[in-house]
Image 1 (cartoon, one colour):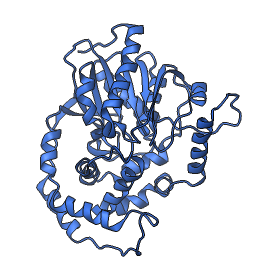
Image 2 (image 1 turned 45 degrees about the vertical axis):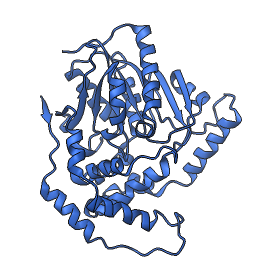
Image 3 (image 1 turned 90 degrees about the vertical axis):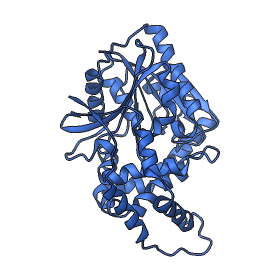
Image 4 (image 1 turned 45 degrees about the horizontal axis):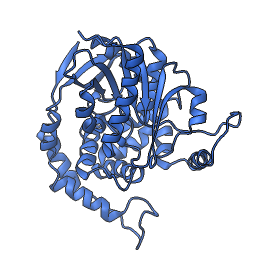
Length: 369
């Protein structure tokens, strides 16, 4: 059963958030610390003050409710999703999947341009946002992809495309691997390059530089990743109890992973963080780092890759081509880890180009009940 859903955060939860923010107990900071010791105190205090006294959740809630939201239960888990139908009845459907620390909000600015040509299904990953907390082990990218396949079946889409970044990339590739007869292609904007000493391929200087960056990250695992991959419950206590803890945990990722020329607005960041806070999904979303396998290597459908210069890492085409059927490759000088929020016009056009090319090969493919 698919049920219409409306976002309605209780006023008591808003009042509780305001009260907790007002009672924040702040640490000190050494002089001229910058970012040497972590997220700067003044910047965080400014964000917290705005979240408490200037940010208007109700306005953003009303804007989000202009979209058609639904929930359904799959594999014992509540699944929230936004469903936007194109004005073209026979349009191809796309399932767009976010990552961590994102949400379905990542795709708000690409909905209008993409819905001109595609039906859009934008789910919240189990354990994130309005899909709610998970309660059992094993919600890895494969299990999530199986849930997406069932969701698309229930919606009546027999052929569709998949797109994602961060964990959404792995989920989309897994979807193509699980139901290749249904997936016309997979487009990703994050495909980490990992050194492969056995790869007999020619690499450019730029490719080698990208691999050096990947080696550095692998040798110096980011603290957030190490903690969430080993003890997500432990960090979950702090983030679920302290709004400032939840605020800095995510705000720092946006500060570090975005292109300085295309910063995401404070309002959009706070709306995203508010989803985590009001749904108490800090721990359940963090579990994905522990449960998810690293990479899916057996996706037989065509794959399109968009590489953004300021992402955490950049893909290396010769290595990616050994694993996937790469039929489309784009490089962008602007944009970082959240391109749907940073440079939506670039990402939307790249997605459109890739999937319209697949349609030219396959012809009309979408069935809608």
